[in-house]
Length: 339
Ligand code: TXA
Ligand code: MG
Image (cartoon, rainbow, N blue to C red; front, side, top):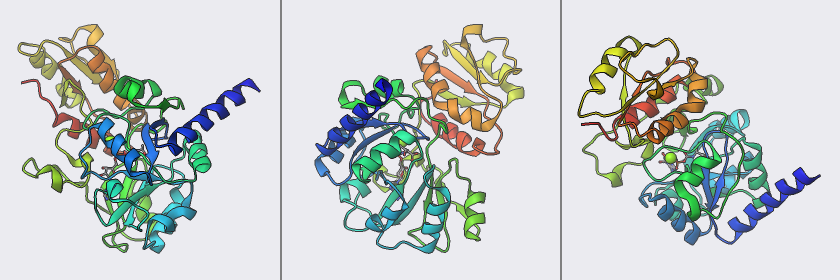
């Protein structure tokens, strides 16, 4: 069938590009990744250069299946096997003590490596055909908004990527949950919130799981920040992000649309009134948190496309993916400000 031929051709091309050290925009269920062969130091360096990412920030290695855990982790605790069996393929990243296979350029010189098996069918096909071991950060420029469609990747990185595989819009919409099992496997810690919840991890492992998501300290020098998600300005659109409660939205909108702010966009669920905002600068967000997560980055990008100076956002409730959405919004809000 023609459709199958097209698909297998794109897959073959992606694998060939990766084998010769090229960069491939890869759809995953969370966000699009910028994939390179993790064992090719030159390719990894090029990927860092294209992203504009500091060398000290480690990237996640994507695997074809849990059977590859031992290739990358020199210590694979029972907790890692259990979590991999339960949540892979899926939006969970495990941090383990690394083997020699994990290069310094991938781990930022740390003694640990982050690994995950994504569940997007196209990502899995590429990983299986390639044999695993693809280093892939989110396919955006460092500090900016992650891509959740192939077009976002083309918009951000354009000609600098050798091929962008189009796997449709991401079904989760925010980056994977990261769990540290390297520091103490008996006391797992969540370094980044995502679709796999701490409560689910705790239930599977039978231990309480601490959420150790670093709140950014503006005084911390960049070399000391291990999780870029913890940086001050991250996930940031050009517009300044301001978080606001639904009942304050109208008053804040009024305030913010006065000079020096020229243009504000209100991102809020239906029913939140904002009389001072012109109709074309009102974007509706889904009321349900998981649905909000799927469109979060597209909404922030839309605010930029409409040349908004400020995006006023009413965040979703904490439940489900709400916590991860609120985390990303708080970090985005620490980026550029209107003043
Ligand atoms: O959902 C995801 O995880 C997406 C898709 C493409 O898989 N990837 C992603 O990559 O979000 P990136 O590079 O944007 O974020 C990777 C995060 C960073 O916060 C990084 O610090 C953390 O993973 N990380 C990587 N290696 C680590 C390590 N050895 N220890 C602690 N954190 C690590
Ligand atoms: Mg990222």
